[in-house]
Length: 429
Image 1: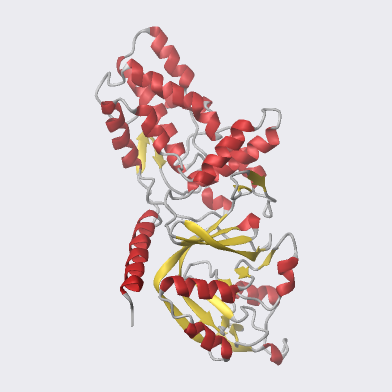
Image 2: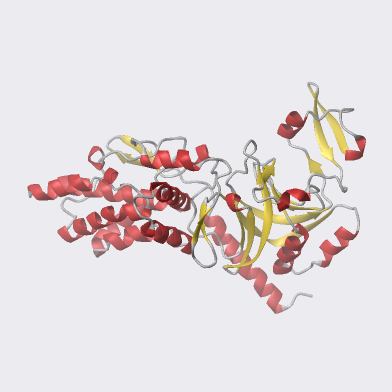
């Protein structure tokens, strides 16, 4: 029998999930018309956009709507952009100052200020580098609609709140604030550290602003998994992540069930790389082969001690076939660097994680215990799916707020730093 407390907890988590899904649904791809060049806010296979604002024209707006105090506030925020790890030059502050010095003002100044404000707002909200998929980052956004920026700028100008509005677009997460503080405290001579901090601040701008009060957070370079409930980490687990040749992608999904004694449906890529064929593997390993035509086979591995998924899999439907799961190869958990899997997340003590998730959901942990006592495949569904974030940060704040620099197992920092620091051009966003 469910108690009122249990029902209340389920309703609370359901409401949080709805809000999370609203923040992490399909990416908006609306286009801004800027001097005849398309600029979409959202993931896309394009270069970073940092052309001079003078080359762009914002959407038609009333003339002379930028008061001197508004322009001054915009220039102050442009000058503050390096504190967010962003080069200020592309926002055209010098061009705005020249126009102001000319005394002309009017529509020409409005156009420059509009273009600079929208460019800066877009980079604060969504990040400067548009080609996130090129970094295997596939976390989608719906909270980065350019129409929101157009409307927000109009409202900020009407209220005389240009700078507060711009700053409201930045991540509010304390972990981003810790990176900002670390950047401010790092001397200019330490360019390497400053560049890595800036790259990780950019990654935070790629994330939706609300990760959900209840979720699972895996930072690949830290080799750890955090279970978060009611906004607070309640436990942490050691994990093995994808090897450099088979990296773990950055995706958002939702854990919907715990599977005890799972079958493993072997991905086609692993069938090819491992050359799995009938008669080529020891029958004791439990592989079953099913012809699919053209000399190819679908392969499943039976539950058992040698199953690649171990005793437990946490199912998270996604296009990348990524799971959280157990493993028979437990020695890898003892290594300091743990990038060895085919892409999935192997979790040390996953039985404890599964029980925690079920207890926080509907509380029927006995279902897991019964499953582990036998060999039959048992699926324990969660009443409320729990968001899962697989992210990639090579600098992160610890519980004490101090930022630690982590290894870069997929060697992604140098390329992202080059994109942030190198020559920029206007591109689709």
